Image (cartoon, rainbow, N blue to C red):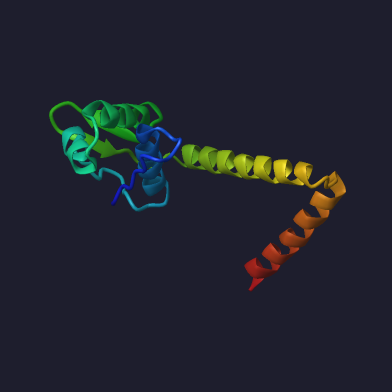
Length: 130
């Protein structure tokens, strides 16, 4: 897994690290029991503070994605299907919020959005059948 951080991003570096590791776990790139790089190793590779990597790993542990075993390192926990679903719902909600903001800026009505959604749903259902 290759982590990419941007110093120009408005997102804090620890959040960037956390998001990329979380995505790798949720999409199956990082499997259960996979070790993460040590906090010091990751800090050195990314040329950032150990405090920053510690914060990212602590947040991931608090959210149930990894476990830190003293003296052994940090490991990916089994994928919690409820957690995976909750993450998907959060992503969908965020996407809907963006759509609603865009629709509001362009003075679109609820019916306009409903028509778009229904058309896309029909296309999606047709693709599922094929």
